[in-house]
Each structure stands twice: as C-alpha cells, then as structure tokens.
Length: 315
Image (tube, helix red, strand yellow):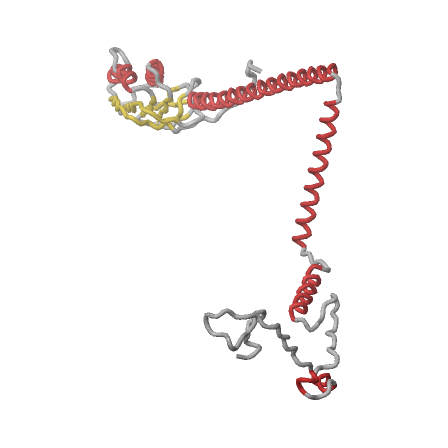
C-alpha cells in the first residue's frame, strides 16, 4: 500500500498481525507535492510562457458594464428602447382632449371642496346667536318659497280650468251654431221624418192650405222643412200664383212635396187628426200621401242675411 492510500494520522506496521496490538510508530512526514521545477525538471520560465501573461480587460459600456457580457448588453438595449419610447412624449388629439377634461374636472372638484371647506369653517366659527338667526332666515325663506309654489300651482290649476271651460264653451258654441244654422236654413240637415206629397189635378189647393200644413208640422215638432226645393224658415211666406203657389217668391209646381225632419210618430198623427190637413185637402178633391222614413235629407239652403239694424245685446 502506498503512502497516498494510508489513512492520515494512523501509524502503520507492516509486521503486525491481525488481532495483535499495534505499537505506535514514529510519525512520518507527508510528502510535499513537487514544485513546478521539480515536477517538470525544467526551469520556471517555461511555465510562465504556457500561461497568458496578461488577461485583457473587457471594454466598459455606457452604463459602467462590460460590453462582453450578453445579459448586460440586452439590459442596456432594453433600457434605451424604454427611454426612447417615453421621451419625447407622443400624444394624439383624443388623448390631449381627455387630459384637458380630466384636468378641468379635477380643478372643479378642488374648487368645490375648497368652497365647502370655507363655508363649513365659517359656520363652525359662528356664535350661537348667529346660527339661530341663520336658521330663522332659512325657515322664513323656505316658507316664502312654499307660498310661491302654492300660488303658482293655483294659477296653473286656474289656467287649466279656464282652458277646459274655454274648450267646452267653444264646443257648445259650435254645436249651437249648427243648431241655429239648421233652424235658419243655412245648413243642410238629415234625420228621421216623413215625406208628404199632395196631388192637385184641379188646382183647388191654395197657399193658405199649404201654410196650414206647415203650421201643423211645426206644432208637431218639425225641425226642418223643405217644399219642392225651397227651405222653409221662420220668415217664410206663401202666396197664390194663378193655379200654383209661390214660396218666398219662388213659384213651385205640382205635386207639392214636403220633406220634414222630426219624430215620425208625432208628425204623421198631427196631419191625420179630424179636421186636419189631410181631411181639408181631400175635401178639395186632392190626394195626400204620407210616408215615414228613418232618413230624410233636407238640403235646400237659404243665404245668411246680416240684419241692418238688429245687433246682439250680449256684447
């Protein structure tokens, strides 16, 4: 066994047998590894020629790091790109508008907070009498505003009611105008009624008989009457014209046809009463025919005339 394989610090005895105690021997010196000259047997300068005399230093970059280091170069290029991307700043028009709006909003909020802080600080520093006076003034102002509000609401209600009343008055006026137009003969009318036809072959029927027929019809509730194309109104007059009759100066020929709007159940019996229009005309050897209908059209019109002297008294 060589000296290098022996356990350091333990004495060796080649003559020792197994099981016998080993006597300590003198310590041996550990052999020193030969130096460069002893190992190679050549002078030292040869070893110096094998090793590089001087290791060149790596160049230093802009940030104090060596350019030979790949990680440092990548970090350097990344920082440079970041700096170039941030400066100079490039803002679009939309970003500039948003920035201005945000600035204005922040400024407004700051001013409002400052004003609220000033008001709160002023109230905190006020005396009790001043606070009571301020509360009284606020109460009076609130009451005045409530009164004004109630007054405005009352005016609105009055205007609405006035508008409703005015609208209702307009409707009633329009309806009244139609009714008066029908009675005055300036508007056409239609409705249930009767048609009375008088045949006078001998010409024995005179104007007074026709006028009696009109009076009987009006008394029975006739609302609109038309005789042979002539509208009968309040001022209508009938005259004899030879063997025929004229209505308001308009000569009408036989047969005499009356179109009457009213309740048929009242109009027809009024003509057939004893001594009435039908019996009187039949005595003159004329024939009378009365027909009821659910729709009678009176379309003969009279021109509206403006009175010369009479004026409305409701001015």
